[in-house]
Length: 149
Length: 322
Image (tube, rainbow over all chains, first blue to last red; front, side, top):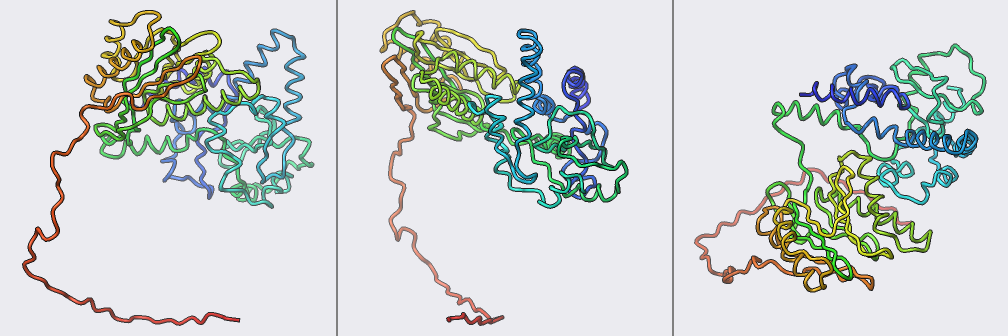
């Protein structure tokens, strides 16, 4: 039964994989110690890494990116090339406003540009990054960020 | 996928592959010092396990593989994961001359057991919009809360009362995004500047604009009553009786609906939320008193055994009082 489910999923997923941003391994088999985490991920298999186990996993991972792609291409068709170019330039500039590598950032400028400061979705309630209980080791994170690792 | 919050997610160039076969998108070039091509691969691999990637906000699908494996292993697929609490409902709505009447029963079931006898299924969305929800209880609750928050932000920004069609559109967007995984069947009713409206929104994002409506597991019986006696431009008392009878028919014929009936009458002037409008006639009434007087049971014998305790270890810790 499982293989039929995956077959149906691949047909739909192949089109999704083609057009959307490529993902690099849905289910990283490495656990916190760098080896296969059999308890949580099960036995390692190529199928697990390539195909998602939940039908929504792939679409949710790329949802924001696909929305942006759609909106920018519509904008380009209506108003010409410069409109989405200018907007993307502003997004890129706002995305670089961050705090130290191990601290969470509020992304206020980016939120205001995107308009998500005026709406609430599941990404604001569930798994809020500002309230994450775990944080990376500050020195390691800074060294990695600066390429000294 | 390891993704630092500050990296641009659409970057596909310059990805560094580690020994585990996962790709890490590179940090922006402006912040990157000159890197030599050769690096001690082993130290990078070991140290990378300490590098923490912030989790993506929103739904987390980490456990779905584990859940599928568990279901396959336990009892060869016979044991399933625990079912979420469904409402198993009858909800109905009717547009009348001066507004909208929404009605709902108050039973919430968890498989074959009644989990909640006084469940509130009519949710507040805006001062002029209310919503009845059928399906999974948590899903309807959270989705209507989200909708209500978004509409409040909108009305604070623009200074206007929200319209029912806006609420229906926002719901459609949310529910379609999750392809029916959020099991919320909703009846949206409200009065705004354009008139009295009643919308049905399905869990996959379908929308229907209708003058009368019933949903839930008891909708067939309720729909029968509505189809028979609905008239356009009814008076308020007639509309209330009609909705109450429709819900009552659902309660009588469906096991998943029961207990009391709640009504919500929305007009241009305001909202009248009557909870309960009609109580169930099968409420438990005790026939007699079932308490016994003290001394009813005679004591035959009494046997006292003292519990002997042995001192095993004693430790005295003096407190510094300085």
